[in-house]
Image (cartoon, rainbow, N blue to C red; front, side):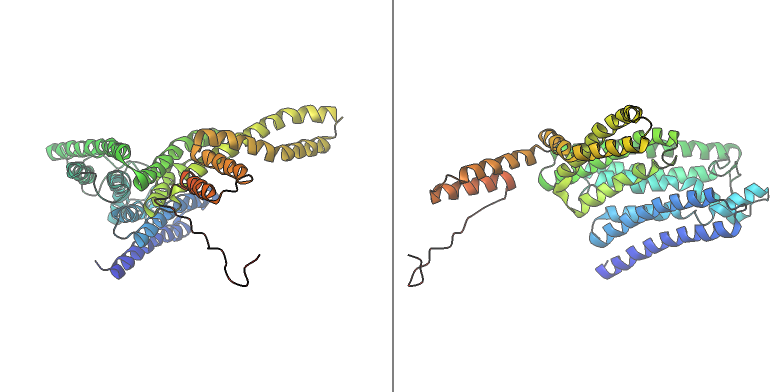
Length: 403
């Protein structure tokens, strides 16, 4: 496929995803009664997540069209939004107690079964192909084929099984279920495909771990970004869920890092954008989290005492505590940053110490040859280039040369 055709296809997939989201909004405004603010906010929140997912796929397909990972994410975003224009209509029919027409049953069946295709497109296959878009070895092709076959078997088996659909507001009969022996066979096939589908996910994760263990250089740094995204996807919901229970943040805000951390990290890895800034990002995150905790906790503990000592002048106590926290922020940040760099960003810490030591020696160094060697050594230790050389301008000669 030519580059122009790939670009056109990438934009068509993205625009189809965007059209499904806009269609969902329009249908919600037209048919949902009563139309509440909560329904609009929930729809906007879900639509934003899928739109960001589709955007990641679009950027990857435009910048790296030969890498199939971007196309997989773009297709996953489209699959997960296909049912959105139909979902408000189906829900309103169920709320009003009216029978579902065949088109509504088909739409409900798509929303009830296409999740399996999304998992394979967005999780299993990218894990097998990261970061170059190629399998680690030909024998991993069996895992990819098993995942695709399991997805197809799951969708077909569930569509024909006699059990009602479960992703709707209430159980709804399928458009063309099988009964009797044929229905039992379809249900068994569905569970076999379900097992194949989910068995391939941890196997694909093992493939990524093995690739990381044998990786070097740029590939290792790419996989480190993916690992960082996985850590954020696992840790962020654990921190946001308690805040959701207390009402400080929306209940479902944990879905944002859970669903988007890994795709965003994969986008950075595949595009190689600021690939070597991961250590700095981790150290800065840990530093500001530690400084915030070290300032906020004493602030909350001292504020009631200061208010009591101020004799009821609460605003004065708050101002004093705030000024104290602001004054302590920068010195405390520098001290914590130094400690964090020693632990998490050792390369930066060692480089800073090397440069500082060279600056001290530079004051007393007068031998040009020694200075030449030390400067190249500092560049090699801090920047680690493949090669380095130093060019010195020859001294001026002639009548204008200083005497």
